[in-house]
Image 1 (cartoon, rainbow, N blue to C red):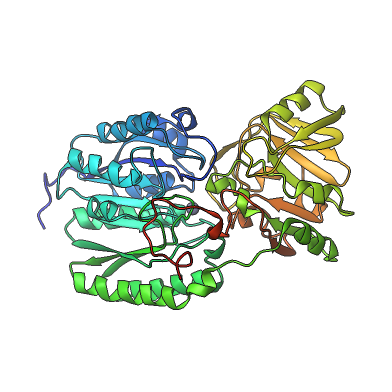
Image 2: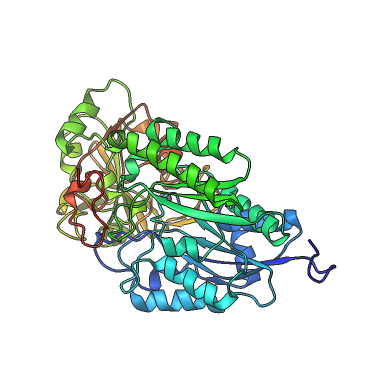
Length: 492
Ligand SMILES: [Zn+2]
């Protein structure tokens, strides 16, 4: 193929917004939630993301490696939370489309895939519609997505190359962005002619069942990897979906991208759907109640025992202040650690100061679902401004902001009180306040799977806890309104 303008290096743009929207979570998500990650233009983008193991870092490195000139537009992200307000969505969606550099040859769009705005249930579909309107039909557009994307037909229609993470915990975010940039490069040099197709399993799966290094999800990934080796298959994205976004297309899907041959995509997609459906019962998670879970943990001779409270999964949009386990921990004869987001309590601790006696009812303040405030008494050990960079394998180098943070020792229970909700995705979460997992017999993690990159090496046992919350693995607890039915396991 003859290259346009022979000597001009090809150039690509990159834009994006990442938000996982839990439509069952308390409150809404406004513009403010996106402000601290707001970057526009090359200098700001490269300054923030060069050298990081993020999607953005991946695009920067791949572009350099491939001799592509990179022209970043607008990028932002926010911690998973409730419904995105229309005002924020409009600003972001238009901002993305408007920021696309002129005179580029291709575009990478970094998205999550489970973003929901008040008037746009398929937020990413709408973003890609606006992007497509700007760049025109036939313009190469690659998209990176989270493994928890609820992929809609619109998203597939308005883009050329979708590449979703293959891992959960997501430790290949960087690699998938590199892959997407390479595919885009091949496409704009005319070496491939991507055709992508979407397949829905008609299954709704809890994130707890999506761990990719063992079990049923690994089997799905292995099948996808085997099919990816077939001649003409460019990429297979296995999206487990996000069951806490009540949208029409929620659930587990596959996007098969092939070089020119739609029949090949159909064959692969049908095999994947059949394989998922055969395994559907194994995608349902087993759990223990709060009292039972603590009792089981105490009985274990060796710790730390990880109490997985995924109903309050910060990474899924939960308030991070659930207290269902706290009274049981306070009554237990062994040491435990729990992180609770409670701005009011942490400000009180800051006022009292290190070494002071602390007495306050903590947590359970966001809504009725996640428990009520629990009175505790203890000593304030540490106060901290709450900023650290990721040191572990997950998004290494990424900033984390816990806000004002206090460590309070209440008998056997050590509580880390934070001002902001921060997911336990990195050892920085406890190391930054001078704690180590080995000090505790029980550790509560408000996460489904992603806690493994922070605590996995130390964990001796794990117990899945069934407590009420907006990220519970027990999908029967939710009342879905928009979700297309029938779907397994809600409808048998
Ligand atoms: Zn995810």
